[in-house]
Amino acid sequence: MDEDEIDRVEAPLASAPSNRHNRLLGISSRRSTILAIPTNQEEPPTEDPNLTQEENQQLKAEYEAVKSMNRAMESILEDFGEASNKIHQFTDTVNSTNTLLDVWMNILEKTQDIMSVHEDKTWKPNSRKRRAVDELNNGGGRA
Picture 1 (cartoon, rainbow, N blue to C red):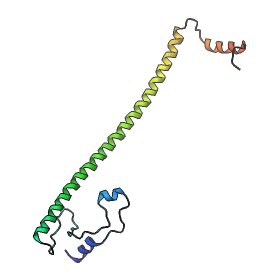
Picture 2 (cartoon, rainbow, N blue to C red; picture 1 turned 120 degrees about the vertical axis):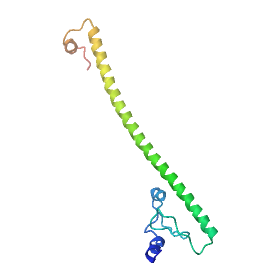
Picture 3 (cartoon, rainbow, N blue to C red; picture 1 turned 180 degrees about the vertical axis):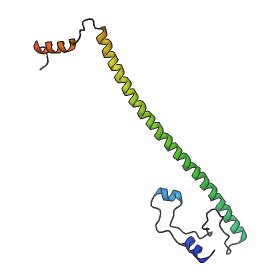
């Protein structure tokens, strides 16, 4: 590792995590003092020459465990994203269903009105208007 890489690895970040998303994404103001993290995150960390072989092996095992946990967390976050999309889709479907139900209720209401008029033997064209006018003229209307 050259001087530039060491400076990038050990330089603290400008700001501390301000919310849970930063913590979940691993953005931190802390510096790593255990292992030197390479700039290419696909490469494993290099061994610390100041530690014994056993300590380096233990740190490597911890590193692999953390990588495994990170993969599991990434999978969980993807699943949450998919679940969120499905919930939004379900909500849209419920809203569409509610709108269709309102339309259907209006159709049924109009159908009942038409059926009651059709079954009324005394009904004549414009008889509703005539009844209303007659009631007003005869004083049967409400004041």
